[in-house]
Length: 264
Image (cartoon, rainbow, N blue to C red; front, top):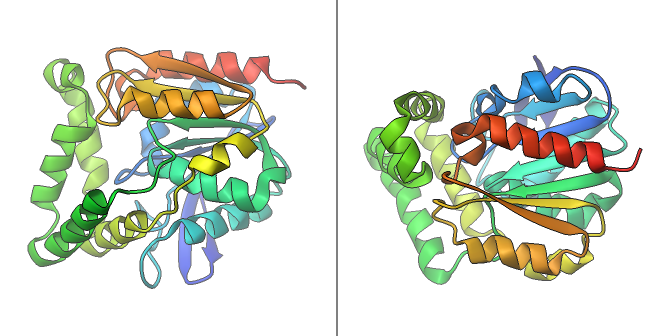
């Protein structure tokens, strides 16, 4: 475990294994424990770095909204701290949003890219307003109702029915976020830029992963796959927005197959 300072926030991360660098960015509102079931197999041949994104887990929010600009700056600071000159970067949901911004700024640091359960399009006017309302509501009322509502949306129907242990693990991670953290991250996502035009500029091997029970439509994954030149798409079934937690063995197998296909 380690910490670093990035501008106005102290950020937490963990490192396991050795070999080519693999950086895993978790979804909102979880933390690095999202990857716990995958790290043992991935770290056999890779140095696996799992940060808590700004405002999540043990990482501080800093001042103001956690924008994609800030997440990208944090990621650069992490790469500098760990001596990373090239890595395969994996982003789930907000992790994907951050990686689009990081690509625009530091494409030279990418050996390969995995975009999982995410989308390139910006928030709609309606969804932006919804995020801002939720931010205000959490600050007024606390996090409990927000967390229960999230659990009903992010986990696939099959997971909610058959795997209560996944629900419990996700809830425990969500409960580590403060109301201020949830509000600050929601406000940052509300203003994230549209990355659709960025897709055609991505020229490294790319894997797009979707869940067939995700609230993000499969068409979003298909769009990314179509627009990114060296891309392949895989849909995990049955799985929702947290596919890596819901189907960890299948997800790890996909990542390992992709990593093994990369040029040395």
